[in-house]
Length: 450
Ligand code: ADP
Ligand code: MG
Image (cartoon, rainbow, N blue to C red; front, side, top):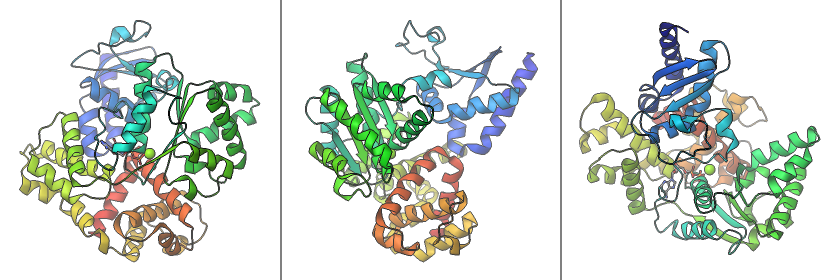
């Protein structure tokens, strides 16, 4: 391929991604990418530092591969090399080790998908999560020994997934030969259904019953799935009998999970139950300090304190506020001051501090306007994606910006029950993590509310 055509393809890929990726992340991760070569089906790019490259892979690996494949008109593999430093720990068995690169696509998916940022080192410990943190570390250090299962529950955005990945990382550090599986209960379900359909249950058993550590995220999504629950119960029992460790997360304690078999709930209850509470201001400050440090940025303490005092809902939003500030200072080139921080976060924060005063009605109106959905459709069973998304965003914002209980929020949406609302909240939060466009829509709603 000619150099011009190669350069042109990178330009087109960036254009495509600019539409999909929200501002600061685009500037931080995608804009700096440079093309090293395109040979056969392999595209080699050079990115920022090791951390940025891992982040890029984790978050946009799929989109990057897809965009290149489209622009070039045939499927390719995209490899991104860190531009600054080469990693020391590349294994000699790794075919890409000589490149110091992180491969995307098929290869990455064969390892447990552990988010490189979700480690114990990056987890800030404070009163609301101290116990959970200690229990999780104990489990990673002595799997199958003390608490089995470990059952972690918390509201959305408080660090369940982070803790689960941390256990995976630490276990593999200490015991690289271990077979670690990390899946959401939805992935477990779809895997199960597919293996049943294609008559490959042996494979399924081999995968799940012969691992050393099974990490299951968001078990509440297994509700109502009778066959999957039965299969999960047997998987669970055979692992426990073999002394293998299981860790489960959920959005509520076992006794409050609806539509899950009693015998499964009683097994969950027989291990160690730990919850994570919302962080108080000092922990929020420590989290912001940690995040700024991870981004390699220096931000004055008074500014971080201001953010910590203003954003109270959950850690995900706390991070969002910081990213917005950093992005602002990148764009404007201006040094961050308390004054600019106040200005930049004004709408964010008005929403937050006024959160107790927003009514469900306001939320419904704002969501319907931004999502262009007829409010009458919300109370019914309409399952079209747009309507379902709008409904779940209302649940999420209802949870964040009013003091209504899950059941009361459900009431407002045509008498849905507490567990439906709870599912909706987690699902949309996950979807927002993966879909920058949805994230933007929700931000627009929040701005409208303030
Ligand atoms: P959940 O799975 O409970 O919805 P996540 O684990 O996805 O929440 O956490 C949301 C975000 O907040 C993640 O980016 C995570 O790294 C961050 N986070 C949560 N708790 C902490 C903590 N104690 N220290 C550092 N980061 C945290
Ligand atoms: Mg999670």
